[in-house]
Image (tube, rainbow, N blue to C red; front, side, top):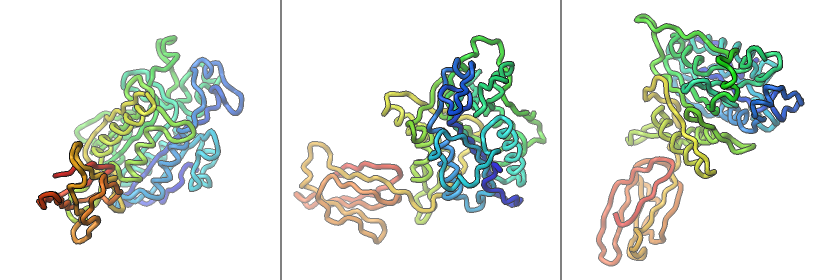
Length: 389
């Protein structure tokens, strides 16, 4: 069964569909040695990070995802790993023949996922897909499935592919779940054979309901696209995609979380926090490898909560002396409420990883014995503070 979890309850909860394709049957480098003519012409090869990234996100949902009033009620996972270690231990025992991301299995899994998400109008729906991708229009996002380029699909060359845009719009306007979050981790370059045909057939699409006065669209349905139109999405071979690496740090480490600053207020990852963090972090990760990758965010965008952190995330704090000033002239005290972290500290720079929140910093200028203080609001992932204040 593709359903790793499915409690079949009608109470509000979270329902997720995860698809990750690294191994392709008919592309170059196939383990079966069955690269087709279309597969060879496409220039596409096997991947090593897509299924791994999908597996890691699915495992995070199973073990660390938190929405107090919306527990994870169903999880459907389809993976095509290139190597055994791409799939997390928590998932391996749940994957069966229908967990392979072929056109038929994806169609069935999406139908069952949609039905599960529709059990309660207050449900949350989450979709993450990773693999080779193409586009036929400037707004397109088509995921290539494991059976892409099958020799028998020559007259419907993209039968082994699914249109994620139409999937998203089908869910958004179908009275299914009030809040939806879509993560599409694929390249979005023009299909390599598009110039040879007036129209390419076969892509798995879904009905898009007509909006009427009586229909109820999702109140929140952002579509996070890992690459901008016509561009590539990158990965670290044998590790994670850059998009998934950023997404995991946003969630696992709470780097995209924020709080209203009041005592004991929760740290929450919202749609706006995800958008800002993913855009900045993915671009930075790509630049480290001399590449360019910009995410896009579209769909119905409201600032809703995606994840509730169990505790305040850590912040990498650096306190340093402004250039040109002698460090020996200053001492500092750092505290949070009655807890003192550093007192009379004089060794600079000070570097530490501490829980996010509001701190008080008190600085003494030793040469004049002047004192100054300020509140220091620490937000993840890092903060640099210069002295004097």
